[in-house]
Image (cartoon, rainbow, N blue to C red; front, side, top):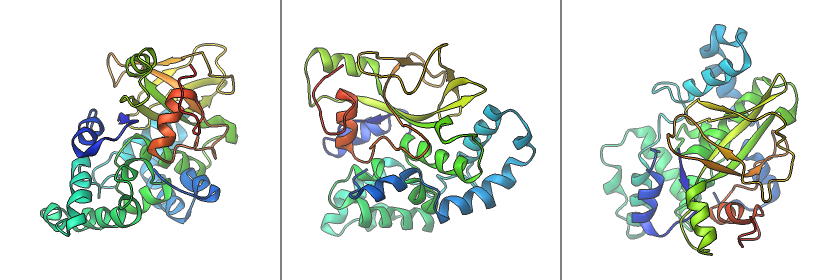
Length: 287
């Protein structure tokens, strides 16, 4: 699931968010909860994921992780069962300003209506794009309305921690990346406002080997020998190529320090800056 690092009205937002089908929080403690194990996360992990995994828990760790992603995408018990299409959220955000949002809800299930209205009230009134970037693992799992890659990556980390499936906090990392051709064009043209698509996923260390795991689709990419998620990324432009996205290469832009680090990926502005400089506070092209 690719996402955009730019938001210019409903039309461009819809076009970018839906490219592959397919956040602003304030205080530090709120941001820390984006990948945290809350009551919602723990309940889903224990009562839904754990029984559904069944014998899979006895398999190798990568297979277990892939099973979790398959469950996330299950139409009956997954984390997107109450999610409407992205364009519905965009349309509702604009129409509700003139009290006509109900027109968009016609034909939605009760669960979809609830998720849509709650997200509008809590996230979208000031910044419509927050519906794609702001929800934490707690909110996504509580609503069962996952919309994009950041939602899946955050939920994955929260559930893996709840089930204690990693040996150490540093074995699981949240990752922010950007689409290589978009980044290179914007960098070469010094286009600070240009669209840069990107992707959020996780990295896991299994038996000493680092694997980039696409938490939206379940495919993976083995990092080369000697790779360390703690090495400086500035100037490296380390490429990732997931089989699910043929012909697409991503550059690593930010990697969490441990399974509690969400990379400051809590808003569209933070993403724009991370894609350009690696620093959520600085938007210039540094790489």
